[in-house]
Structures are given as structure tokens and as C-alpha cells.
Amino acid sequence: MIPNQGPFGSPPKEKRSRVIRIEPAPGAIIAVLLIIAGLWMLNQLLPVVLVLVAALIIVGTISPAVQWFEDRRLHRGLGIAIVFTALLAVTVLFITMTIPSLMAQVTSLVDQEPALRARLTNWLAGSHLTSPLAELLRKVHSGDLVKMVTSNALEISTHAVTILAYILSSVFLALYIMIDRDRLRGGIFSVVPRSHHIRLSRVMLNLETIVGAYIRGQVITCAFMGVFVYIILTACGVSNALPIAVFAGVADVLPYIGPLFSVGAAVVAAISRGPAVIIVVLVLMIAYEELESRLIIPRVYGRALRLPSSVILLSLLAGGVLYGITGALLALPVAAAARMLIEELRVELPGQQEQAKDVEIRERDDRGEEEYERRAEGMPAEQAAAIAVEISTDRHKEEKSLPAKTAAPGSDGKQG
Image (tube, rainbow, N blue to C red):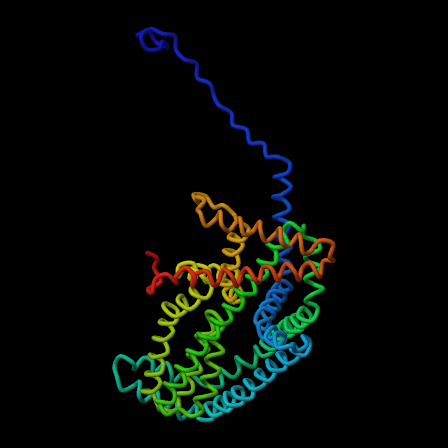
């Protein structure tokens, strides 16, 4: 074959280089810049956003109780006052039950520290495996710990005051939101096109449901922790078991450091009972923490928030990595809200095919919007918002009753 010639003597094909040009549209560039600016602004205003989110969580938690009073023909303002007064009473009761008892326990431990340390050192020195720990314990002095705490007292108190200020800001903001509910809701609806009012009201209703489910999950897990701590401390003959159990249950709310507080409180309370009781309490608490993180939390929050166990664990991990304890605390409701928004906004995910159920949901959306347009025509934003919420609430109740109606033909809940 002649060089530079193609097969069968044909002239060679010229090699042409391809140039790929990426020319983004001006609208896409502007959208990306706006997203970057929004994320930067969100990061700068993160404390304000967290206060707002905490206030909305408080509102979503107490709204069912206020609604319960309203359904019984009690004025909304009086219902709000009763609920907030009850929350204040519970908070004061918790403080009076736990803090003095814990302070007395710590003071007693400080007074007994030399005798307890000597007893623990002699017990550890009795074995060749634990003798190095005994030598290490002999070198530890309570004065060193007191000096370290005293040197960091200013920084700790500053953080405590800041956290308390954020908590109080969230509570008062939640109170203002509850009082001005109709006006705020009307303002939100006035800036949204009327064709989206029904969907907006459903999103707000589902967000309230998610917050309620999240709080119920927290109450269940904290109650389990408190009951477990009370049982083991009572069985081991530890005094003041009830306030310590209450503290451990409330501390369990905090991700990551909450279990440390719960385990630490139980172990510290058991110190006066000797090394054997300390080891028993420590082992049982660690075993329960593993059971809670592996089994109880995925099951409780999976049912309440309709999230798979894998999504729950990944959400907690991602929230903790991004924003620490606060991120982990808000990870589950944020994940549930994201899933809800995808469903309510009818976002078509890749690979998803339209089902008969989707067609039925779209038809119900159209009927709801037609009814809203008919009933809210010519009304101001506040009244129109109330009508949209009423329509969405009726549809939500109807959808909750659908599974029961579906399962009625068969005694086992299956259709033939």
C-alpha cells in the first residue's frame, strides 16, 4: 500500500479537529450568580435563619394545642396564652427538679473526691491489666480540673448567654407569629400568584405536620431514655434517680453530645455506689445508646417523617458535618421537608414514570384550584388565605381516610 493512502488505494480521509464551544445563556449565568449570592447571604445570616427556623418549629409544635382550644370555641389569644403559660410552667418545673439536684450531686462528689479517688485507685491496682490506670489516677488532682474550669469560665458563660439570647428570641418570635398568624399568612399569599395558593397552603400544612411528627419523635426517644435511666439507677440503689433521669431524657434531644450528657449524668450519679455499679451503669448506657441510634431512632422517625432508615442516618451525618450540632438537630425535618416539596411541587425525577395515581392527584389539584377560584373571587388576601387553608385541610383529611376506605373490602386490608 502506498503511504498516506487509504484502504484499497482510496485517498486518505482528512483528520479534522472538533472544537466544542460552551456558550451559557445570559439567563443561566444570572441564575447561577443569584444562587451563589443567596448562599453567601444565607451563610452570613445563619444565626438569624436558625432563630427563624426554631421559631417556626415552636409554632408548628404548639399550633395543634392552640387549634384544640379554638375548636372548643375559646378565643385564639386566650388559647395562645394558656399554651405558652403551660410551656413556661413545664420549663420552670424542669429547672427546679433537675438543676438543684444535679448541683447538689456535683458538690457532694467534689467533697468526696479524695475518698472516692483513693477507693477507685485501690480497686484498679488490684489487677495487672488496670494497674496503669491506677498510677494515672494517682497523678490526677481535683485542683487541676478546678483551675481549668475557672480559666474557661468567661468563655463558657459568654456562649451560654448567647445561646440563651437565641432561645428567648425564638420564643418571642414564635409568639408574635402565633398572634399575627392571619396577617402574616395574608402577606405571604399576597405576593404569590393565586394559581399557586392551594399548593402553597398544602405546603404550609405539610410543614406543620412534619414539625409535629418530628417533635413527637423527639418526645418518644427522650421518654425512652428517661425511663431507662430511671430503671437502672433505681435498680442500682442510686439516690435522686428521678431528676437525673429527667435530665438524661432532655439531654438526649441534642445530637452527638446529648448521649455524652446522658451517659455522664448516669455514671456520675453511680459513683457513690462503687466501681462495680459504675461499670454496670456505663455498660448498660452504652448498650442502650447503640440500640437507640441503630434501631429506635430510624424506626420512630422513619414512621413519623416517612423517611427510610438510610436517609435518616445520612441526613444526620450531613447535617453534623455541615453545621455541627445545630445542623444535626435540624437535619431530619429539613430532609422530610425536601421530600415533601418534591411531592407537592410535582417535580418529575429522572427515571420516574407517570402512574394512575399521579393522574388522580393532578385531577384533585385542578378541582381544588377551581373551587378556590370560585370561593375566593374578589376577596382580600387574608380571607382568601383562610379559604385556601380550609380547602387544603379538608383534602388532607380526605387523603388520610383513603387507606381505611381502600382496606375496607378485605378483612386483612388486602384487595382481592
